[in-house]
Length: 447
Ligand SMILES: NC(=O)c1ccc[n+]([C@@H]2O[C@H](COP(=O)([O-])OP(=O)(O)OC[C@H]3O[C@@H](n4cnc5c(N)ncnc54)[C@H](O)[C@@H]3O)[C@@H](O)[C@H]2O)c1
Ligand SMILES: [Zn+2]
Image (cartoon, rainbow, N blue to C red):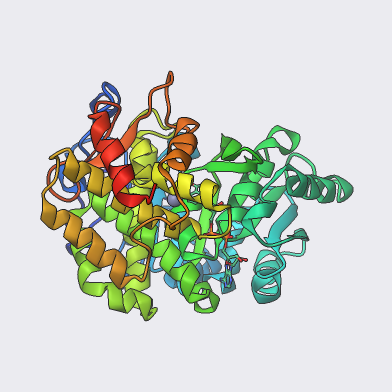
């Protein structure tokens, strides 16, 4: 795929859907444990491309432009179906996120990212009957060279473990998949994380494509290369950073997603607004009803904007030395809820929603934000019908026990993502008054 290589904003594309070229020195974000990260504060100057996107009515002008190689008709047709491409800028491991309606029926988009002739599609018992056939068709249509195998795993977070991953390896080895094969994750975050980790480790790493089918996976888990499985004692504890070749988001797959799963994904969308994108947060306040009603344009916009935010963060801090940790707003409290309440009782986004309220409340207790922000966060999550407090069984002790083993603990010190200043500003820090944390836990727990 051709990429823009000019060093300024492409003013030929209509605002606000402009192609952006964004550069921010890493030193700004990793020199201390505090980083203010408002998206609108990003300096735009010469540098490598972090995010690239195009408006729907001007499908991919950057591909057609200038010195880009001439495309064959199948490629052109494929580009025309894509309404947005967000580029994750990671040097020679950069990759596109294609976002659009009906993309599962565009063979060229997938086939251009398949290396070799063998593909293993990894999916689960719920998604296979809905989408597997179409994905196999897209992978093989017009290309008899490609042979596709699939492995259909049991559905659920509790199967995101070593035993289930072994089923993927069993299938790959029995099918004699070699180094040049491609693993395709077709499903939500559980399948994406597990399949990605399998791809990272099978014969020390094979090609990997993400086809996320939940809102959670489309706005968050499929982007950025965090892959892994759970250990019985801790969630997502075993894994690898491993980037896909591409992410293909067919927004139509959301039509079959249950309402509760949709709302779970909305929690992560709200998160992007709070940590770095005040305009996006305001847009959400005005358009939450449209998102819940599954308005295709509203969903496509929210997915695009979320992917842009995540792509920017990942390209600046792939391995989470500072900036990337801010994507975990509410997650320290949320993971404690998931572990304390039992995995699968609440969906990830539900736990994160309650966790964000706790982080926001703590920020307020510290005097770092004003009360109107607390109100706005409660309002938007209530609108989305997401929980705004932890389940009643959660105790201060349960929170503290889970927080002690949080991945953001460094040298025994807990670091949290907290809001500071206007919406869009946040810090990742261990430098907070412990009393504010204790008071917050007491305020949300019965004992
Ligand atoms: N890697 C990351 O950066 C990252 C980020 C956020 C979350 N995660 C992980 O993602 C997981 C949660 O992901 P999730 O919320 O997608 O859960 P999930 O993968 O369990 O999917 C939720 C449910 O929806 C079903 N489903 C999926 N797509 C469907 C569709 N189109 N129609 C009907 N049903 C469909 C699934 O079979 C499942 O039952 C957690 O394990 C979490 O740790 C990872
Ligand atoms: Zn999350």
